[in-house]
Amino acid sequence: MERQAIPDVRSSLVDVPLLKYYRTVKIRRLSIIGLGLIGTSIALAARKRVSGCQITGYDISRQALHQALRNQAVHRVAPDPAQCAADCELLLLAVPIRQVPGVFRKIRKTLPTGAIITDTCSTKRGVLRLARQWLPHPRRFVGSHPMFGGTSRGGNEAHWLLAQGARCLITPAGANPAAVQVVEDFWRQLGLVPMRTSPIDHDRLVARASHLPQMLASVLMGLQTERSIRLSGPGLRDTTRLAGSDPALWTEILLDNADFAAEALHSTTERLRQLSHALRAGDARTVARILRAGQRMRNRLMQPAPIAVSRKSGRSRLRGLG
Image (cartoon, rainbow, N blue to C red; front, side):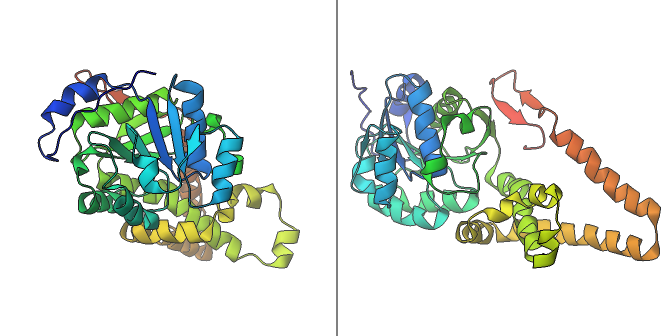
């Protein structure tokens, strides 16, 4: 396999020699740190859809490494993050936010000059701050958030089809524009739909669309009793699927986005207070109005998302994401 020469550029501010390289690069050496559900699904999608791509994987769990090899998600495994990153063109971090500083410290000396880094973290302000703090070339870090997953963290439920048609939110703030394009093209190759937004808009909107459902599902199940569970129908199961997610992982996510998560909870509390007052007052009109608002937005959710495409750049944005 012919290897592409990565330009040797020492400055993190002036990436001019890299622009031509980034505009023509075809990812042939992909490294993935973190082989849980998302990392392994992405590896499987790359094996399926990116021709000639050699994938190296690392995970802190030896069981995850063996499983990734057994399922042919990766071509080889590395003994540590530094060696996993040492020969890549694109490095994907699919680890929880608390592990990111340690990974950055370990890879900063072995990461090839010109290599691009992206991630799968559920919040973006924190990971971008860490990239600026720890990486020698932070402009080659492009924040990503593929919007798929499940209640399991392990790679045993991974499948390349999980990524197909899923949105992938891209936060290009401060990144080399050509590196951003490489990352977007990579996600597109895997079957995802990349959408650009700012880190602050990302964190504010996912607090409402992703983190709030998790919190409400957990609280709702925590309010149940043995008797209420025994007599429940499918509605409770449908509404509270997310309550089965890993509490430790979600504690990290929520604390990393605490301001916007709390803001979303406050808005919910206000709406619930309105509903409670209406019920106590026998105010059928207000009760019906709140229920109809929920029905209307549920119907909207089940329709295809409106996608605006810039005529100038061809880039996609979800309307409302800036």
